[in-house]
Image 1 (cartoon, rainbow, N blue to C red):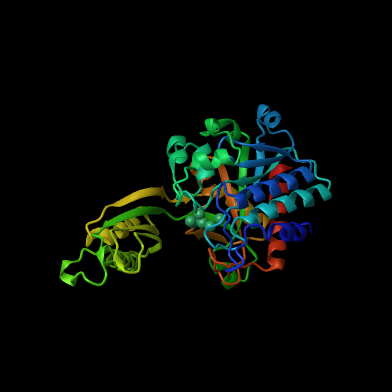
Image 2: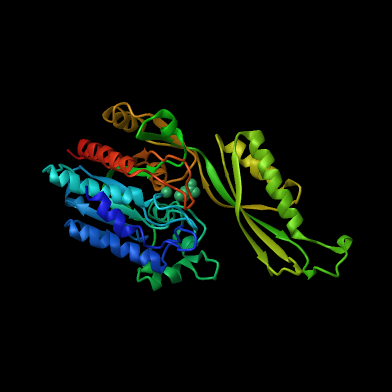
Length: 396
Ligand code: HGY
Ligand code: MN
Ligand code: MN
């Protein structure tokens, strides 16, 4: 199976030797190398490569526009190649490599699909550099306004527009991409499971049912810079105390509302060992069974400090195309249906009204967004087989 050779060639790209994690951020050198890798794999299969207005890459087997003209839009498979800081090898790339391997499997079977098939690489799914997840899919569906996206800045103050332009992408065309969206009849995203359900169920593959609501908020905590050694405690205005209460309050409220809450990114200024910070910026990621509960957690997190939680992104509960999910489950020996707390481009396309499904591949530890993220090779092959069966069924 060609999965193994592709996996070997992509695995070293963007890996950080010191941690074993990946730093594959949007519009960086690592991302450019990954995009070149994707283009080469597409060319090797004779797939027609198209880059859309947001920079997402689409590798087509067949003519998508001719198919649209006769009312038979394509079957799209794939995922993303970018990562969170020191992320794992599988979150994203497993879906892209599996999709390319599926093209090989179906061609080897001599399939002549009655619908075009595409492999997609969505750009900037993690939002690790510019702060908004699923930026590529949100831009083409209009969920993320181009001007707002292009003005987002990374930790060095570089805007997305500058980063895109430096990577050679035509910034002036960034925006909703109806032409791209109408080529999509069905999108199926294969993804490593980010949990342990499949191990506990003893099954290799599951079908996605729903993405639970989740969002990201920025909390700005002001303080007063002063000397760490000479300032009396009663004279201090130390924002780190507010940070501590925010983190603890978020955790307590999450437990009380059946949610999860994380402060995984904090920026201190001036960030000196012997200086009381003048300002702390913290990002709160909160997710749960319903919007009311999630927003209650956010409100509780900032209540004591009186700070404002500025919403940077929000994803409502997203239900996939359930008849499609049931069709896939039946096709895959009654594969279990799984809800997830993780966001995905498939969720963004589902919110845009496209017929969308997800397949999850077993993850022995359930760990993700970590160098320890792992999927057994046999499990990856089972995922390719499942995605091939699904793609053949949808494209016949
Ligand atoms: O944050 C998420 O759930 C996804 O990994 N972007
Ligand atoms: Mn992820
Ligand atoms: Mn992902």
